[in-house]
Image (cartoon, rainbow, N blue to C red):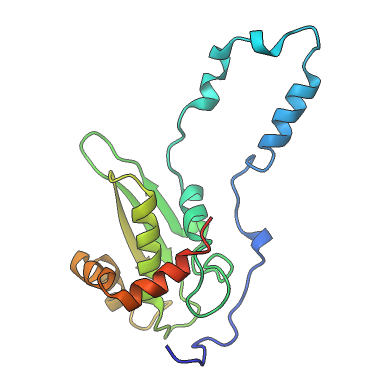
Length: 187
């Protein structure tokens, strides 16, 4: 990589404007309000725990969870996240859940910041590695470039979804060093 950025002036979104799970920010506030507003004559330790079971159930993986996993990945060129650069967007993520006979599928469409971005495959590799490390093995991952957003979109799509090319890239220490740096900002 040269010292000169490929895209010197990308459009940047505020981290506060990125999509967030509704209600997650208010979860702690709601619990505190429930405790404070509980009648004092009812002991909290004597309450029926069976009524809590609905909130303890494991929620299925959804698009917001995938976005949360990948939006904080650092761009290899700028000190910004893929979410801030709008390389990954919530509407461009789809999740199909696994069944007893089929694997689930997570499809992520990435939008490079410029049509000749030479880092699109590296960004896609970082997203793939992050998802492979985070998702159960019952999910397959498909990463593609948004149609019309890259001049070599077919070639990039083939590289991002070819198991042998991905495996070869993962054996390259220099590439993995860059990917590790990209993933170091993930929360």
